[in-house]
Length: 213
Image (cartoon, rainbow, N blue to C red; front, side):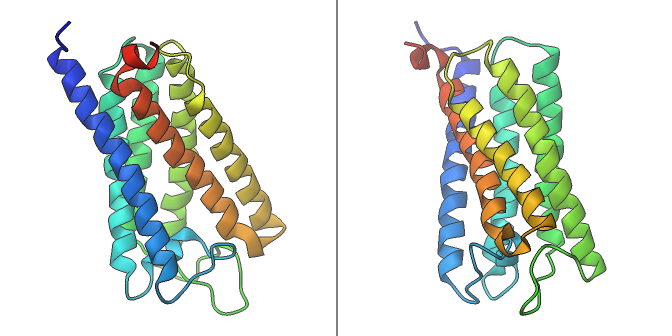
């Protein structure tokens, strides 16, 4: 059977979302190796946007927003249509906008000996608001769309990455309250779950018939 135009568009956006995930990870890894050499364990990922190569992290923030948009298109072009699908798409759009806003609101880097994510300036406070909102909303979107996804495919990968993201968010909240020296790694666990979910969902919906074959 010849693929429909809708299926072709869905594949293009799914492939783009998957490529952006890989690009995002690549940029993150490279930035960790460049000065000023922030700690993966104790420094938030957003700190990478502050420094001589901060523009690359700004690209990543925007890329995450574009990735969200691509996933929205993929989901919207996948059956069945339902209230869950619509709600998940709206939540994912809000999360994407929050990520894009981080481009214009850099974080406050902690002074030596201080840990956590406490803002010290107005723009730093704005960053925390958008970053926190983005995390919470994207996890809500992932939860809703994972429930919807179960009507599309039996594949478990998106649900597994959702669990990783939720566990990461819980660990991040606990580390902020109890052990701020490890907020960097807990935040990255949550991010790994988010990015993995987007990749896995897009990979299955790129060609759902073949994935179930």
